[in-house]
Length: 322
Image (cartoon, rainbow, N blue to C red; front, side):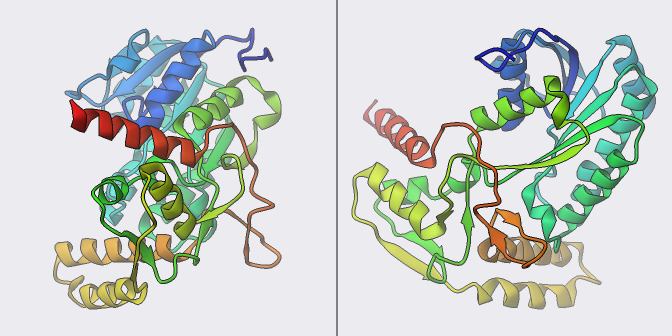
């Protein structure tokens, strides 16, 4: 392995979910390392500029014969899946997190592939939601397949922790769940996660493993995230508390109508998702104690959430000035 993380072992790689935020970062990193990237995108979708240099192939992941032919024709050696359900609803999770990945796996098994790298999520350690169960079902299928596997379970993404940037920038209070100390995480940037995934392509010791990964520590609470954001905005911290119990109550009420209404069932799941992230830390779960452990959560990379917030604020301010 060279100092920049690249290796002499260049491979032909099919990247599913290439047009997404993480997918674009992974594509760039793989190309920088000298790999040949076949970017799999949805038919009719706009191809991001960041994928320039990739072999762009529009494909329906549910079309197994076409997908199998593509993997074979492109002589793909490694498959990387960065696809994920956008909504987390049971139907979408089944379709994307399980069935689309399963189709991709079957196509890979029929070709010349020997390695499948899956971008999963650390929250599947304590599954309570439909999309988590769908991810686990595919992880199980991948482990049982004929291919070498690497399952990457990142902690929180910078993007997922940036939803209140505009609120704070406009002088509004940062919203906390209860006191803001219920959960902690070690967020990782797109660039650092992409580097970690690209390393999995060429490092044999990462095969056959489930790899939780976070960014550089220490683990931070929601209140500390808010304090970082106010510091980036140059404002005094202001907080408003939202009772976590509201999400549970909403889920219970909506669940009453779930048997008769798909809308109610979907909204009930969204409420459960909100409650989950308000109460569960994105850290490694200690199997012995049943508690989340910051010490047991591996760290990787150098990008910090505070730097990310400062960059977002500077970009927003420069746009407003223009």
